[in-house]
Amino acid sequence: MSRSQIYRGALSLAVLLLTSAVNRAEEWQLLPFIKADSANPCLAPRAESEFQSPIGGRVHWEEAHVFNPAAVVRNGRVWLIYRAQDKAGVSRLGLASSRDGLHFQRRSAPVLYPANDAQRKYEEVGGCEDPRVVEDEKGQYLLTYTGYDGKTARLLTATSRDLVHWEKHGPAFDGELLNEWTKSGAIVCRQMGQRFVATKVNGKYWMYFRDSKFLLAHSDDLIHWQAVVDAQGHPRSMIEARPGKFDSDLIEPGPQALLREDGILLLYNGVNAKVGGDPNLPVGNFASGQLLFDAHDPTRVIRRSDEYFLKPDRPYEITGQVGNVCFIEGLVQFKGKWFLYYGTADSKIAVAVRPQQK
Image 1 (cartoon, rainbow, N blue to C red):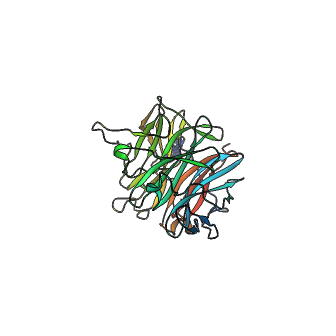
Image 2 (image 1 turned 60 degrees about the vertical axis):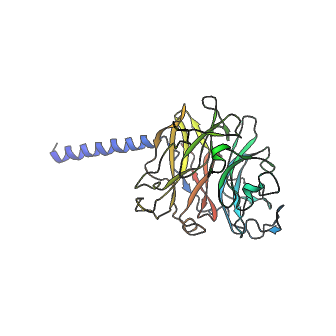
Image 3 (image 1 turned 90 degrees about the vertical axis):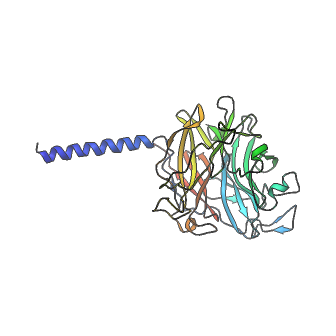
């Protein structure tokens, strides 16, 4: 055997070992997701939807934009609870269902909206935004959503038995965090068939939340939450942005966090910074990454994806109310496949599918 043959053989072996190591490193991630181009965008604004607002006149409540949906499987269908905006910029949450996860029928009226109730002061100006939904052990649905008063985005909670009728419970936090920015609540769940059930770790429920500061909170009842704090008693950031990466500006939780044997998997949204970001991505670009936390210690990060797995590259993801945005928020397993729902350019909704694994 010649030296060149020995060299080529050694090089091939090195490439094989490196490829194998990379594949092993990615085994913990939920991959790959393929955009369903034949169906996307799977929801778009609809001018004809009218609603009599309890604190205003008749509005075309989803005329301007629809985006950022939560997702759940119920009675053989995928249900999306999605954010819809009217032309005044007020958001309400609509409900749509699908038998195949791709093509949806929607209710004519929203299911959660600003009303003359105890939460009016938190919701009236900007409305109800960016939901996530899980179940509790008794089959009740728990919704975390953002109430925006025009100045502060607060994380609020609501519960339902049927996804249509919701009881609002108000802000998830009191004290120091009541009047601070506290959006995007992703609760730690265990998958039980097609259900995602909020599950205690070390005797507590857990929730990753907020953008900019990536925080963690715990709860006894899924309604009232307390932030994990540092030695000085201030809310403690679990993870930071990374210079030069797709998540160099800020990171924000995506869908519910999944408790598995190897850890707590969280899919998240990352924003590219104006200075010191990924030079191959536009400034302000929203792309998606994955995190794995310790299954016994939700504060400890075990793994973090080096690269994004989803980025804006379709026209409706690049151009819209806010350009260059894929904002993941809804995740279900349905008919043997994973369906990931996301807002596109803050204007429409799309879906990416992870094929059934052999």
